[in-house]
Amino acid sequence: MAVVAVILLALLLFIRKKKAAEPQHSTHYDYLKAASYITRDNKQLLMSFNVSWHVADAAVFAKSSPGNSITLAPLNRMIYSAGAEVVGLHNLSEFVNPDGSKTSLGTIEKTLQTSIEGKLDKNNGIVIESVGINSVKQP
Figure 1 (cartoon, rainbow, N blue to C red):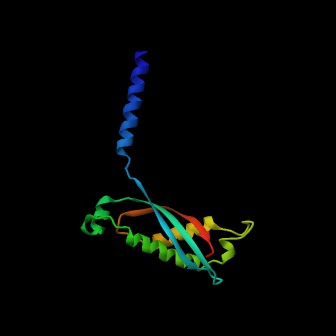
Figure 2: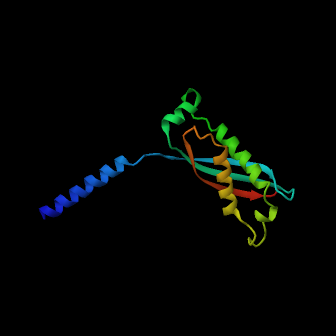
Figure 3: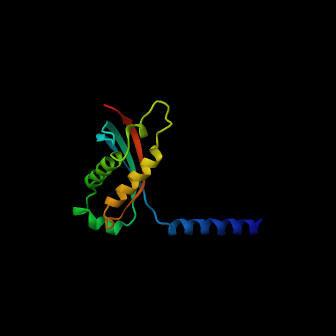
């Protein structure tokens, strides 16, 4: 019985030590309100996005934030800009169609993430975790 207790205590201490060594970060979610975008076939869409991100390097992030304030405006502008670029590469049918057979939203979301990461200053300490399309509709 004592041997089992010692083993359990050792496991508990090992797990606690491992958790303390892992970098801690919290994920932030930005839900951007719908904006108007033009597709490759010149159709107008109203789309909204959500982006999950976290601060990977707090020191770098603090240096890149003026007055140590967290402002999401630059990140939001990058997301809207990436949205305009990526939507413009696709036809309406790739976003919306009656049977869903031609939609490729997963691929478009990955392209959006890559585009946002390309616009993101590598010296700001932020990592984009995922980009999702919340809604797509024609006005």
